[in-house]
Image 1: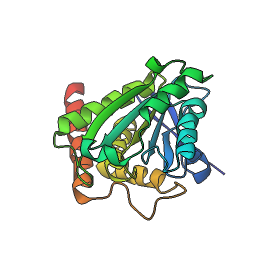
Image 2: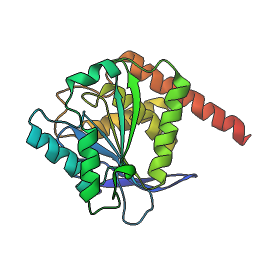
Image 3: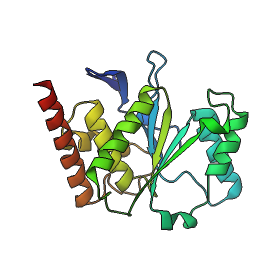
Length: 223
């Protein structure tokens, strides 16, 4: 039985897109692989998920160590708005600590990067140009071999918006196709709480608009 599909674009190496629950899962119950690292390709990986934390301090520490030392995450993209952050157990210092003792390519605190991109819960970033820029930046980091963890609170709406745009760029998909692929990957998580990805009409609209403009500009450049 086929468990993945290889999709190609002219500027992207072959990437195996996970299409089964077994292939998508394995990071945590509330996250999934979007682009999975491959032993036969030089690209890194992309994970979409909920806030990487746990109410129990011991479990919280284990989760962060797992992401850094086992999965190999070296970049965290945080979409939670600044005034929400005090509600969550911090992970930055733990991630830096975990990097010091890891046996993966990440070997020091300096190798762990944290990128804030605040978006209001259930909404979208107000500047589509900045949305496109961070999506392109994430793609470039994956091309460089980094493993990226993109998260908001639950990892559904704000995260799904960016991930859908990234999928549309990487695999040359229009808005609806990108949303469909994102939703398929998201729904293979062990726990979704029945929440779709993205969550709201305004998020769906931004995915379509950003990708429409991106593909239109690319088409002009090729003429």
